[in-house]
Amino acid sequence: MGQLHIVFLPMIAHGHMIPMLDMAKLFTSRGLKTTIIATPAFAASVKRARESGHDIGLTIVQFPPKGSSLSDNIMSFDQITTPALLPKFVEALSLLQEPVEKLLQELNPNCLLSDMFFPWTVDSAAKFGIPRLVFGGTNCFSQCISEQMHLHKPFKNISADSEPFVVPDLPDKLTFTRTQVAPFVLEEGTKNEFSKLREEMRESEKRSYGVVFNSCYELESAYADHYKKVLGRRAWHIGPLFLCNKAGAEEKAQRGKESDIKEQECLAWLDSKRPNSVVYVCFGSMASFTPAQLRETAIGLEASGQDFIWVVRKGKNVGENEDWMPQGYEDRIKGKGLIVRGWAPQVMILDHPAIGGFVTHCGWNSTLEGICAGVPMVTWPVFAEQFYNEKLVTEVLRTGVCVGNKKWQMGPSEGVPREAVTKAVERIMVGEETSEIRSRAKYYKEMARKAVEEGGSSYNSLNALIDELSSYRPPAPEIQAVN
Ligand code: UDP
Image (cartoon, rainbow, N blue to C red; front, side, top):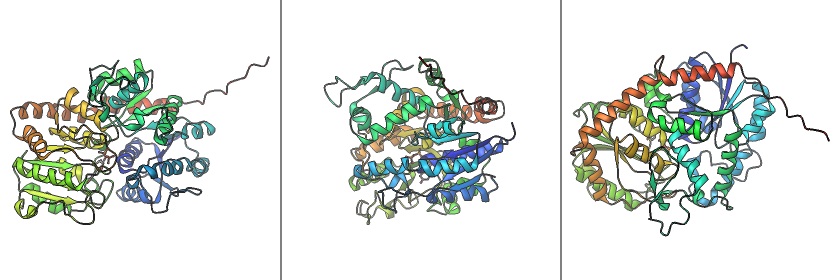
């Protein structure tokens, strides 16, 4: 077989697109031909990668697609802010099937690597006799929890939403409350639109060739083994993907979107600080908070006495004004606290020696970036599988402490008092446990870096995957017995 050609179909969400682009860069650097099918809103980051010298093909597919009832200004998952929009969005994702299949016909690849949000791609790939690999944007740990939740439904027969229950059959004893579990998991089997999609995703994953994880074996070895041996799935750990490519400073500063703070301004601010003295606070591309919560966070951070960079998303969680901000706040924190409104160069910031801690919503990319920066974390999950990721950080790796949020919430989140923010930040920055947590964090940082080096576990795992894809033969069609 000649050069392998992999087509990537990313989900239209920054948390999924960023690692998939990293993956395309990695595959290209290993000599494979790669093409990304992107919607217009997400094409810019692929174009930037091409301009920085990555030889990745780009093909555009319109979104919302023809026939969709979604309004034209919805271009990305983070714009789905009300449950009412969700069914239309889910329908729009499925309407991509026809245009994507047309593109596959033209591109004629050897493999389709598509996001879990496109369950129909398993059938599309089968039509063209090629394997479909799944990418879910998350880790194997949370997939194992999700699967055991689905199989055992341990949240049933629990008398109160706040009563803890253990998820059975996992390598560790992990405890949750119903409030921390997504409604579409609790309501599985009902007419909930998202529950139906989740069922299709689960079924599609089982029929796919396998799953690739943006993680490395060493970070979740017991769960990687569980996934294969107990759940019987095929998987390759090939990350942390963002470490695989030697990105230049500009590329690092502009992951996903262009930053709303100048790289030099941010670096100069950090350069003026002592090592490990600044806490970085950011909640990813989708989470939002009520004005009351933003206010509590502001006061809690200030009271911790620590220097901080805090990324506050524009628009959705800030509203048109900044009434949430305590009077005179920015004057009081001048020199100590830097508020970035919008998008920050997260990987660049986390990489700086002045950063000593990370308050994170536990999106998997952010969690992984925090692990690879070797910094203690305050976990503040909000929705998606973030409450699962919190357990990996606080109970398995033990490189972070919980802020104490217990409520899964897709809309604006609230409920964490200022005292909890102060206490958690102090625990990771100056508390008694700090040095132990920090030394564990450094240990995992080294481990993750080694995994992607030549000869490391992720490096070898990708070699094995490429070898398998090179010798792939489509299964023979089943012959029906004739009576
Ligand atoms: N990110 C960033 N700047 C920001 C916010 C987020 O660079 O101001 C990046 C972050 O580094 C990560 C991704 O966006 O790679 C967010 O993905 P994650 O899985 O953490 O969370 P999600 O946005 O999917 O909730």
